[in-house]
Length: 165
Image 1: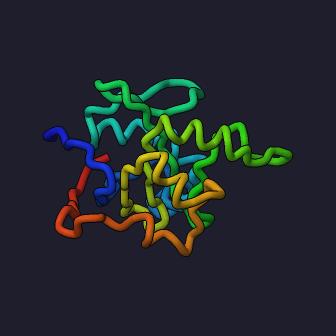
Image 2: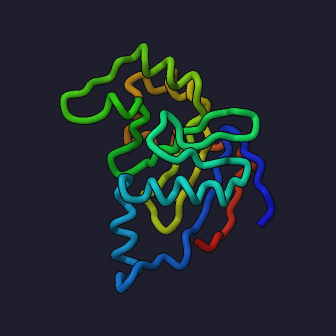
């Protein structure tokens, strides 16, 4: 597979094939992977196959990938609940958004937004953190804003590629 240069605000479409695990059928696997908590670890590694300039950062760091230029990337899944991109330590019961810290973190990152709502078909768009934070002040993209998020600025850049996983 040839290396794909990462372009900010370009929509990439991928199709997952050969999904399997033990005796589960593809529909059962898709149901499980539709939950971002379960698909995230797999997709973080798969993103490096689709975009070889990315290196996966193991462990629970404040970012998931880095490239050869030192740019840091954080992969976030867009699910039926939308996409939450606030810092992980601000998500969960008893935690709340600290906008100053969230802006500071987002300014350092490129977010890899992965739409998993139509598995096995997915969409990926890379977004500058400062732009995402400016457009979504609550650090969450609601489900009804999915089309807004996954719109290529230059329409003729839409790319479709089938990939075996």
